[in-house]
Length: 171
Ligand SMILES: [Zn+2]
Image (cartoon, rainbow, N blue to C red; front, side, top):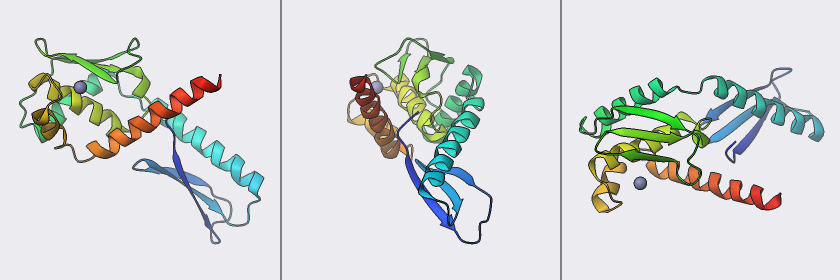
């Protein structure tokens, strides 16, 4: 799982119900006031697990990715990037995505599969732009920036990489 910014909000009016939801790259956990520290920690962990499990079930398929890629192209690239296929691949440890512009094929690393939709969309957007512009020059980034959450998504992915390498070092 990506590193998470968790915000715990306690409410005196809330008696028994606990809930959690994502707000952009933040996770909000709503708890009743008056829980002990230990209870609070347990609830937060439980809610995060539950949320992650729910997102896991919602994981997009290859077909979903293709549909989303077409949609992103229509919305931000005037439909100029035309993906022929998009699929998840397991063997990309160092890249989030890759593509073959001649064939219009895009591959997305399964490492990002459980990430929020807006992060997955950013990676799709990046590869879509590569179908039009192969290198990472100014023209490339100008197009990528048409995706409104580009900056935020990059921050999210960077945080994920850092946390992943830190975890590896701990082993
Ligand atoms: Zn690139």
